[in-house]
Length: 371
Ligand SMILES: [Zn+2]
Ligand SMILES: [Zn+2]
Image 1 (spheres, protein in one colour):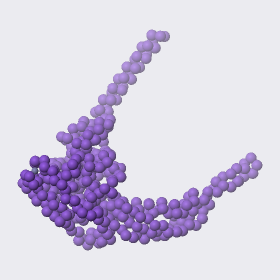
Image 2 (cartoon, rainbow, N blue to C red):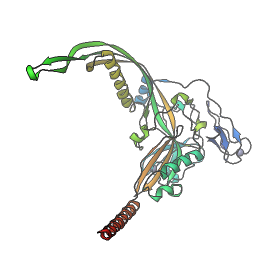
Image 3 (cartoon, helix red, strand yellow):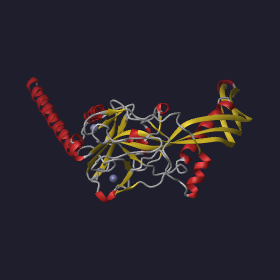
Image 4 (spheres, rainbow, N blue to C red):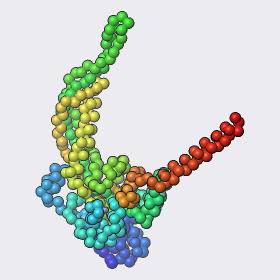
């Protein structure tokens, strides 16, 4: 069935040749018809990635006045998994029959029209295509010792999908007045006679000043349901190559909508920025050790972007629970949870025991012969 996507910033028509559905083809970075294979140029969104004023956005979120803007496709739909609660948006026909996060089959009535959310400002398009992603994941699996065979048959039992994750990135300029102390290492001679020796000690001096910091694109994952520690290891994301958002980049791929909004993610960004400010203050204080007693931070020009980052997500069910493996869709960096096969480990231990017995017998036989 022919669909027509028509929004101000993105116009994804059905294939001109046959009316088939167009998907963003990673290998060619073009829109490709799923029916006849014809390719079409993406309509580039002009200009730079836009940064938004954080304070304005916080007000909109608090007042419940978030609304869709032009960069959403008109037929965008959302799937909410009944097992794990994960929200996924897609356009056109759904290309997944299992939830990408927990591999539970998706029911027809899980699909709804997408609710109102903060608009997406930027997207980092996938550059690792299906074939390359498949090879990388096979290599990763084959490098895991004692991985259960469920991992090798993920094509049938699990889920391996391209999913855009939701992130908020934050920018800020700060000016911080501080009071603290500078510790300087000194040496002194103590004791008498044979006990005479030099020792080092720290002498503390008062320190105060003002430091400035500038933060750019501090990324915070806005999704729950992922193992955050592992996802964070996929950094760095080359966000400098992100494009102004066009829904065409997500055509044929899944996108997870944010679970934590721009205000909820701000805490983590603030913590990271405060760590940065502390380290600038330590440099400013100098000396061999520093103490910070007081900081008064003025936050200026706070901005944010809502950005989609590309993830190849492998989910395998083992022992009745999902294991997720993550691949950065640009750099190919992989981090994941992996179960250990009890059967394979037991077999390996049994083999080791047999070998040990063989060696003991061999040694005792040869020892008996010489004596
Ligand atoms: Zn076509
Ligand atoms: Zn799920």
